[in-house]
Image 1 (cartoon, rainbow over the protein chains, first blue to last red):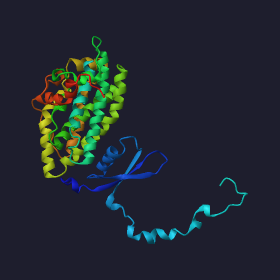
Image 2: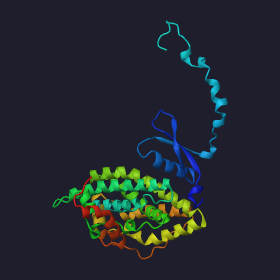
Image 3: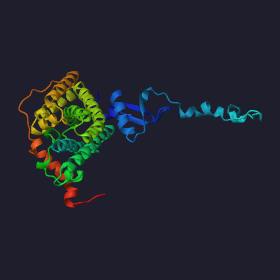
Image 4: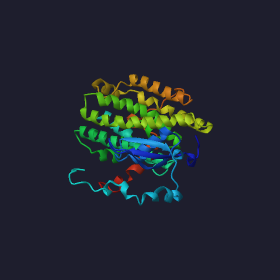
Length: 97
Length: 247
């Protein structure tokens, strides 16, 4: 363990706000081990009853898409409206869709 | 009433001490952890002091009157909890020694039927103190089994506070009457559990249990170290300067 707080690794925090919902990213924090990260997440992010379950993930375990790749990754979806269900006109006989 | 006053005073004084860390802890996350614990304790103090105040039939008092308008000689908290924060390790050592004591005591009070109001307060407190004990014991492990410096410093902190641990289990007439009524736990049985917990964590943390020497007492009788008076001066300044002020 380091005596320098800036050397504590960064953790990303995910909180499930209610049973049945997914864990949602709420922020990040520093902690020297996983147990401390859970404790800190409890104190920092669930003080006002925001959650029923917490995940913590070392921030360096997350691989993020690069903003410079965003054209290649996301733009091709822009002109493919047929991927949305609303593109299709349903026959009148089909109700309650 | 004395028993409830002691429960309230232990929580109030330690809560005020931990609150002094606000904005000063070694990391933002730890700052929030310590002040969360402080708020838990002040909440417990508020509940216990409210109950204690209503039991004084001659002159019922509010929780605020008990907290802000008594002198140090009227406080009945343990000497351990009034000791100043020192460094972060000192604060953790003090907390670690107190948490298990507080937890065992609250678990008993939550189960007894002599005073159901106190049982309700204790039942809520048990959940909070479990987290406090988890927090402090994990820090003892990290610091004890950490670097050479953290190891020697947390050992020194434990050695320094050890003389205040005897008071927790030194039963006087209030403890004996409380245990007889069922409200308070039997302190000698409780000490066995406290010892085994402390020994287990210290061993895991590669720390040495300090030798029992002369134990300081007096807190339960209102005979305090200088630390308490200084702390109360700050804590009570607003009510003393502007009596009855509220917001």
